[in-house]
Structures are given as structure tokens and as C-alpha cells.
Image (cartoon, rainbow over all chains, first blue to last red; front, side, top):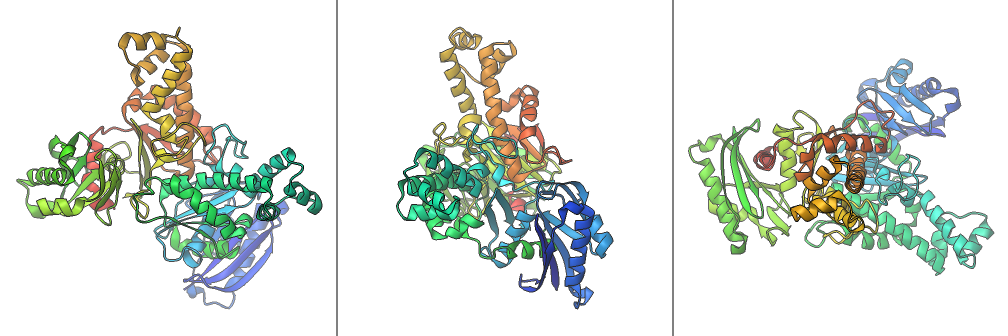
Length: 315
Length: 315
């Protein structure tokens, strides 16, 4: 059986035909013309599904799934809210069905990506995994026994919006001190800018002035070169990341917590000190024989497509 | 089919024969003589099981479960650590089997109590519930689709050990700023004592001096009498409780979050302002049509026994 997965993003719609085992057989994509409104975008998704299905026996298509940014309800088929798409209460399932004939299953895009990593990526063959994407925000998805944790609304697994420092940095969601405000790339850059302002003599400051920008890569590079300001920034960042990940482990105790997104590309330079910082914060760590493995994701943007394709089997 | 549930506590071992629907048919208990060591306690549990099973057709006993404080692994049968019992790596299943012939299923006592409330208490007929016990610490259990969330070790659902204020009050677990340090009865009393020291003129201070003690009841009573110090303490407490509960909802989005323990006896005096404080902190609250209900538990100590009895069906 084959499945079709669509990853709807703010700038592009990506899709693929995927095998049960998560292998991509055929890919296609088109830009997201969100300025033309949700009906238009739904028509584009339908067109992509139709193009992908071409050449396959309809009986061999086990189902179609769509990963969508925002608050997405599979039970109603409605995207309740998507800041990226500027959508509110849009019945995506009905619209895609109208234009393609296919009944799609829906999930938040981060939830779909988490499923993708479980099906075919870093968390294959595990019973429970939490995937965190460290980007503009902190996206997250939780997969338990092969099923996506959606809660009673589709709104579960918003781990980025767990307050870790009450009264701390203001989050886009309105709370103060959300994990996302510290552990996102945005959070890292904010902390770096604060530190650079205090330390204009730092290598971090000089590099940023030279490149005209400060980002995850320049911060980690300055740290590797021994710049004390960059070292302190990265330590602070890893501290917050460890607090949030330890919280996640104390909630779910999954077999795997895996990181994706730009910052996660730092690999072991990030993961090794992170594991060390997380361990003592895990409840019962010294008594338990089994420990959550903290890994890097392996599928990149394919995680979202593969996961979306597998939604019909995992909701 | 009937089930036998045992709730092992630091001071007493309580047990019952329970129907599939969670009705208690027969109860028994004995003191926990923990000073005589784990083998002795296991023998006492075995004796209680045997006494409870008496008069029932062995074929009609569908299974036996034990709820135990601490870090408990059902897959191995081992209690990895229990501060209350002073146990480390004790094979409780093997010991109980040796003395009773019954193979018991194991869970952390708070997890078992959560299951009890789902089977027969405030969260009957819901797909997902989180139960928080506001006592010396914050006990917690998560039930998803009728199954206890144990994670890969039995160590999941330690929601009290989620940091909500990084660098805050020191928790017994070693972290700083755990939810438990603010939302437990202990946390409330600590905040009250701090406020009383600053406001010796307060009614709260006078009441405490009169009664010779400060506890949840005296704090809420002084608040009802309009004492500004007590009002501020309760507001602060409810704030922290709301931060943790909103975190829990953003993680799990369960149908129900329910509270038990001494503080929860305040009923609507606690729950009404709490609901108001939680709502704006829930991610996507204004867009979602379904909201987590925040309730009081209804089973009292029976929750732990009923839940333990149902462990053979819910692990």
C-alpha cells in the first residue's frame, strides 16, 4: 500500500508518494500562494495530490495526509488557526475533498514531522518519541505507541509553550517564559545580542559586525574559537534547552527525544553537553536503568512529508 | 470478573476486591511495617491479597495490581526507588508472587490513583485525563485512551518535577523551581509563612498564632475573611498552580485535569479562580472549541485502590 503526504508550509507545499515503510517514491511541490486565500491553497493541495496519484492504481493508495502549521483538528477537518497561513476556522478537509475527491487526514506539521522520524528516521522502532524543532519557534510532536498525541482537540504537544521561567521573556503566545522563547534559534540569537551589547570587545561581536549578522552558526563558531562571550551564550542556551528537555522527559519519559532545525545541525557540539546537562535533572535518573536517548533527527524536511503520508495509520 | 487492588503507602497497606466497573466489594488494610524491611512488607501485601481473595472463585479474579510510591517498573516488577518506603531496587513482583502465588502488575501510586478516577471517579468515560494530587508534593498520573502513561521506564508523568521557574525554590529532587515546590500544600504553607513574616499585623498571622499552625484550611479561611495577606498568598498560589496546569494542557490537552489532596478540598473556592487563570495560558485557547475541564477528584483514597485493581487492564 502507498500513501500520499502533503506538507503545507507558509512558502511551499511539498508532497510525496510514500511506501508503508516510509520510503519516498515520487515528490512534487508548488509555492503556497497564501495571499490568494485558503480556497486557492486547498485547490493547489488537491492538484498536487492528483498529480502525485497519477500512474498509481487508486486501490493501491491507502490514504492521504496533510501536515499544516497551526492548530489543526483531525476530527472536524478544520484548521482552527494558523498564524503562518493567516487562516481561521478553515475546513481544509472539505475543500481538499471537493477539489480532489480524496478525504485527507490532518495534523499539525510538527506532529506529522515527529511521526515521520518515528516511521523512517532517527526514532525508528521505538515506542515513544518526542521531536523538537529548534527554529523560529520550538515546534514539537509526540508519538506514543505509533500514534500521534493530539489530545482531545489536536492542540496537544505544544511543548514550546511550556513555561520554564515564570515571568520571563514574552512569548508570541502571550505567556511569559515559554520554553520556546529560550530554546528557539530566535531565543539563542536574542541571548547572543544581549551578550554582545555587554561585551563589544568579544569575538562574537566582531564576527557579527563582519558578517553583518548573528545566527546559530556564527555563535557556535565563536564558541569553538574560545570566545568567552560566545561560550557563555551557548552555555546559557544549553541550560535552558536542558531544562525544557528534562521537563519533557519527566512528563513523557520517551525512548527518544530528538532535535531538528538549524541549531540541531551543530550535532555533537550541541548534543554532548546537552545530554550532560539533562541527565541530573531527570527524575529518578540515578535509579532507572533505561534512559531517554537524546539524538539528532535524520530526515530533514522529508520528515514532514513522510509523517503526513502516514497520518491515516497513526491518528 | 473481579480484580484485587493494593495501595501501598508509607503508613498503611490498603486493599480491595473491585468489580470491572470499579465498584469496591470488600476492603482490608494493615499497617506498613517498613522498618521490618521490604521482604516483610511484601509478605504483608501477599497476606492481604490472600485474605481479600478468600471466598471468591480463583477463576473470577482477573488479576491483581499494586500501586506503590516511588519509581516503579511494571516490565521488570522492580521498585527502583521509593523514598517513602526506603526501598532501592526491590523485586516486589517476585516477592509477592513467592508469598501469595499471584503475579501482580505494578504502577506508581499516583498513576494508579489517576486510573481509579478514570474508571470510577471524576473522569469516567473520558479518553484522556491528568490527575494532580496537591499534598506534601505534587503527585500526578496521566491516563490516555484507558492506559496509564508510563513511558519506557515507569518514570513518566512526574509532572510535579517540571520546572516552571528556573532557578526558583529548591525541590527535593535536586532541581530548582519545580512545579511541586509551588503547587504542593508544602509550597502554599511556605509562601504563607514568608508573607506572615512580612505582615505580622495580618489576620493570617493572628490565626496561625492562635491555632498554633498554618495550613491550607487556615490560609483559605483568612482569605475568605478578606485578610489582604491571605488574599495575596492564595492569589500567588493559584498563579503557580495555573502555570503548571496550563503547561500540562499544552503538553497533553486532556479532556480532564482533576485535582485531589487536601488543598483540592477547597472546591470551587480554588477551582473557579484557577480555571480563570488557566484559560488565557492555554495555547490556542481562543480558537479551540473544546476545552480541558478542570475538576475536583471524587474518590478520595479509594482512587488508589480502584486504580491498582484495574492495572491488569490498563498497562
